[in-house]
Image (cartoon, rainbow, N blue to C red; front, side):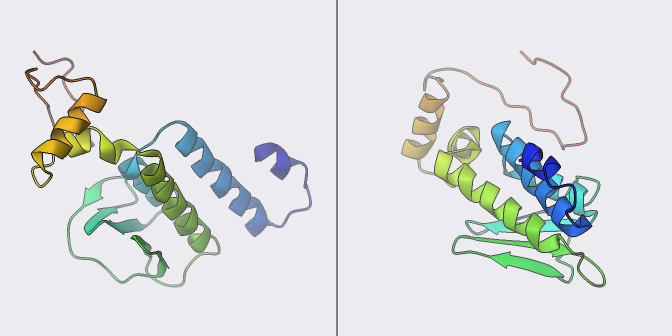
Length: 166
């Protein structure tokens, strides 16, 4: 995509920025980023809070890439699909590429689903709302036997894990 963008030197600034957004999300998808990483990238790119409602779960991230849980603010731009809604919480008028960011964010999340992304691995294995069969199957995909003893350390995104824990 970048090569194509470079071959059109006369593109206006909005079109050039749109191509950069597409290329950025393409790179994120190639590198295997999960939904929260995509959300953080969209928030950093737009400089405002970004929210996604996917499978009945709302996840929001601020411009500093922190997950937030306070009540929704006014939505300035929104993308709605059959199983997914994504939005920006921008005060004032939307920016020229807000819709493009939301479109690429939503497409990337839909691709994660289609590929059987992170939501089919560890997320399922530790989700108490899933059935035992779903959780056991998720562990099997991770090559963890049901009898194995495992310990999971969860931290806030801004806190680094101390290293391997035994």
